[in-house]
Image (tube, rainbow, N blue to C red; front, side, top):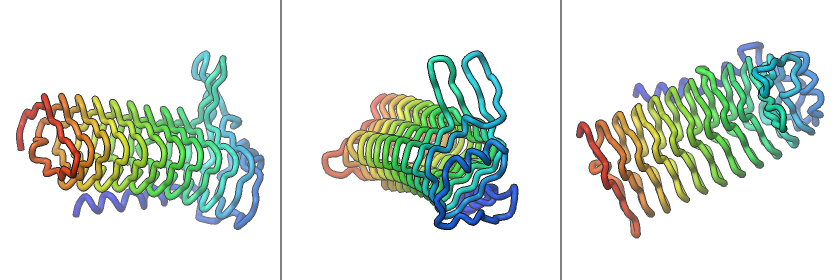
Length: 316
């Protein structure tokens, strides 16, 4: 019961945090078409933005904020001091928080809450290298084009991508999450990357559908991580990853090739009732507590389970 309380209270806290700067008093935007220049203008004046049921035409560009500074000879950081709250909105243009040319890389820093709830992004979304100092929520949203959060930093106040749908290629590689990270019930129709990412607090990937390849190579989970009921329809790679907290893949469905080679499992690890219809391998991995021979995995037809050269330091 303790774990259930933790799972449900945290997302509610994240949602409330979106509106801590002011009361929920939406702009009169219902069914309105808004030019992105209006939003960009408010951003330049550091005004908070709250919109509901609006369609935004044009590109929202966070790299043109008034406050900026030179980090080094090749890096410029723009600071956004506006709290952003969008509910049930459709974005027809690009979301730009990162630019790069031959001379400079331009990135964005968000000092206040960033919330996109039940939104639709029809063009590319680029928050790569962004620094979210407050809560970041992108829940129950649809990303119809390339989605890029590469090298983004999420603060201890948490990040929530639950129930979102990623239709095209999604990049979450090299991200650092210092708070609770929730992407449960999400759907990835195309390939997704989480390579080299770090999760310093609990991470929840429960009931996620990975319809194509997913890459979690060299990811570090420093706290508990839950993939329960998730479905992996193509290849999944966790090779050379580190699991320091409680690790659960209960009742997952693994298809084709699923690799956990050269991994470190420091705490209790569970794969009970996971279904294997392809190849699942823990080759050369080290378990400090759990024993893969006791995972109670369901092997379906034409499946294979490999734990060659695994080491169990303290069997449980």
